[in-house]
Amino acid sequence: MDKIPSPSKKRLVLLERLLSEYKGNLITSKKIEELSSWSAAVIRKDISLLGVHCGASNGYKVAELLQAIRKSAGLEKGKRKCCIVGLGRIGQSLLGSTELDGTDFELVAGFDSNVNRTEILHADFPLHPTTLLEKVVREEEIKFAILTVSASEAQQCAAKLSDAGIIGIVNYTPCVLSVPPSTAVENVSLLTALETLSAVSEQV
Amino acid sequence: MDKIPSPSKKRLVLLERLLSEYKGNLITSKKIEELSSWSAAVIRKDISLLGVHCGASNGYKVAELLQAIRKSAGLEKGKRKCCIVGLGRIGQSLLGSTELDGTDFELVAGFDSNVNRTEILHADFPLHPTTLLEKVVREEEIKFAILTVSASEAQQCAAKLSDAGIIGIVNYTPCVLSVPPSTAVENVSLLTALETLSAVSEQV
DNA sequence: ATTTGTGAACAGTTTCACAGCG
DNA sequence: CGCTGTGAAACTGTTCACAAAT
Image (tube, rainbow over all chains, first blue to last red; front, side):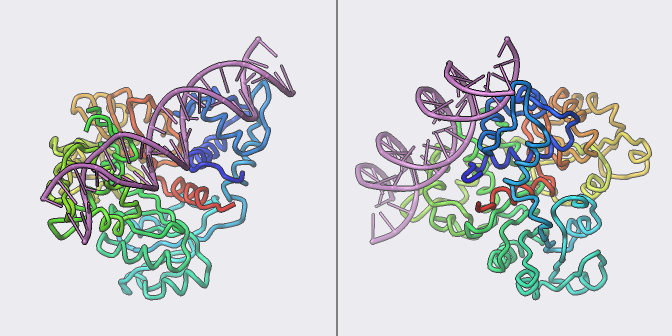
């Protein structure tokens, strides 16, 4: 609960997803091993770090385990506000996405430096010119940003976002972002992902 | 070159991107620290693992460094074939994407279990029903897959892909995939990314 | 003088092995 | 008796500090 290592946190978040789709009241670490690519040992250790004791000789109680992970991951604190920065091809496709429906994350604003776009496009939340980014993020206390601008604007936007109090950036650009430690970045660009796969699977 | 730890490999791949946009013949580890979020020490260590000596008292020779990383990451081995599995909203948006233009990755096939889609949609490469997945992947020796199917099909497709010889999956679904160690997975789903950010930035 | 390159110390993670519990 | 839960061991990765290089 207090000081869980970051690799464990990441796995626990994925475990939450896995469990939320699992049909059954009980699950063993062995069964989780089968459904994921983690070892039973790592799973037991991760769960033990939560500090709850929801396991027994027949496995973990799924409901209690889910509850514990959600609490530890800071889900369950109500909706978490997100914004989209950059309304090009990828950004537009996210405007209409239902991927966050029913989750703890909520899109509350979109930004683009091209005022045409912010005026023409429509979404369930307001679209602003990028000049208002810092103001809106601060006022609305938005904590997460989805960065879908062009490579040339990426670093500059990332800096603005950190300054405005954003704690997490989902980076759809293939750029390496330089941000202070108070801001976390997840790189999800297709090209970055493919290159990473290529590098780690090189069996030289 | 031989046995580079995987975190170093991932950073080197990102460094390659950073350097390829850098204007200048020389760059110091201090400068890279500024442009990224890594320490100068970690950067020097990563580079030293490449086994080349392209640095001097005034910094690294950018061109030589780029060359060395590309070689080590297995880029430079000619085009790497990729396929898209799932032609729903995300898959379709990738069909028209220019993100891989000019890179070492090349889309050579698309798959969907809905034959309507494979017939109606158009791309610069052939679209097949998912029943042909294993056959086409094997024959064309496709090594990377972009998984954009629905959550309910994800695990089943991932298993087929591993069987067919795929070594890397870019996973756009929020599912945890169970694959053998011969297949690497990069999770790039928006929801997974946001949950990960939420978990790691919890300052409990 | 400044920066690389690197062994060695340190820190963080994973694995192991088994005591304890239902 | 099988499975969790967990210290301790083994391993992996990062930081440090300084010798070598130009």
